[in-house]
Length: 329
Ligand SMILES: Nc1nc2c(ncn2[C@@H]2O[C@H](COP(=O)(O)OP(=O)(O)OP(=O)(O)O)[C@@H](O)[C@H]2O)c(=O)[nH]1
Ligand SMILES: [Mg+2]
Image 1 (spheres, protein in one colour):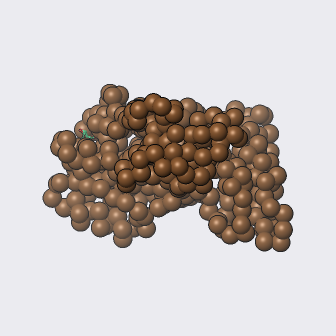
Image 2: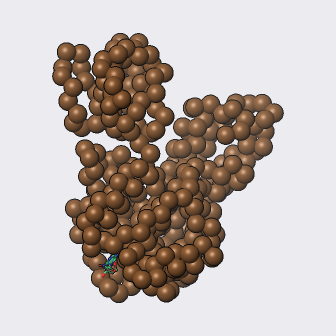
């Protein structure tokens, strides 16, 4: 990002993206303004933040004076990340959630089955990931809370029915309806650098009934309608191997590492990992384990799949998936 923003600022920005109410947005924007380095290079950003702050104040005032239209839901984040499953009617959203989690959302061969969001838990190789089933998005059918879900998600799974000739247009509608509400289904997650009111969310396109004849052609038709970013996967959810592949791609899409901790003298025991974003250091891990421990951290010992077996490393050591770490103060 431009203008050498500090780590504290970036954390405040991430909290802002995840804020679910005007009140929370206001608090995060105040934090961002406090944290932003004050120099010429950040003047435009500072001005943008002040505009956003004023908008958040106005939202708060109008929320207080008139009750909000439409339903509102708040999903308590759980597990290593929150994945929102979106798509047009009958695109296979509930089926995806039913296959990957223990939840049993209603799955039916006709549109507009799902009326309410349903959070569920997917267990994946020792960690848990939150998946949220949602009602369909279509022209004239976009509950405002779904925009908020998409904006605050770690990952969006966008479902498209590979067997339906209507699916390319219906899926393009989802892109465009969200884009009109300043939410871009994208190949990255975070605020837009040009316009802070626009949020990008990393998106994985899932073509359900992907084995049906013509699914690839329908997928190509989608590209003629909108820019489709990032990763895509064709699945037939009747096949357990495809469900397994989908689970792996969801895990990969979260871009987290599984890190196991152990105390000195204990054997290496790979259960109950912490999850940290890719790129995290030993210090970042310590902060997640305990603030006090992080403050006193001096070094660590690492056991890794790539062959480390107890070597001593510093706080800035960059972790890899599956590392076992002994933190020393
Ligand atoms: N064979 C097969 N059937 C699928 C696949 N994906 C979805 N289906 C079927 O497609 C139908 C619709 O799936 P749902 O999961 O209910 O679709 P939805 O997107 O949740 O639909 P709404 O809630 O109405 O928006 C169901 O009969 C599913 O079993 C797939 O990959 N293979
Ligand atoms: Mg459904």
